[in-house]
Image (tube, rainbow, N blue to C red; front, side, top):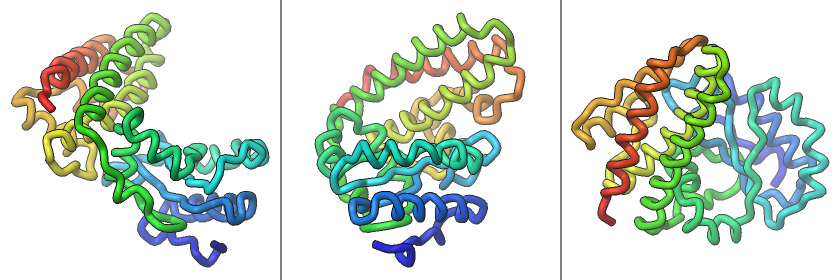
Length: 242
């Protein structure tokens, strides 16, 4: 591959230049070892907010190269200023062997990604329903633990908002996986994902809805709403029959 193979046309206009720069950097450093670069997640949704949401990507290498990662780390501050999160580096073998242990993350990439370089190796991935359900359960229970521990560390209210924002990013990934389990389409808009889950559950999730736009200073009441919603989701996922 060379720089002429870079295609950012399917990305939002405001992230095209940073992602192109990232792709050029990876090509320069990895050369023929780089097989795929794809953007995935929030940057491809209708409600993407570049001020608080990083651009996430995945780079697939022919073989893992720690020396390459060592070379790239010096570029971290520059990429961070462009709101680019460090790419997830994988190999095709790693992806194939991780379909049972990390299906929720790979499902998110499969259902919400845009190719920048190379041939799409995510579209054809297949997942086991019991594996997906089990990870959804584990992720929700982990989120509850993280929120409890985070609340203990949030000695002032301004620390609650980032705690909730981080939780929401993880929860949306799980919600999309739950829709997949129920053989339902996953909307590109985060609010529509929550709405689809409400329809599935037949009850409201006010905490998660409010969490989509967390103010700079969130309250304990908002925290409690989010926590209760995740508890309800956890109970629902525990009872899904696969």
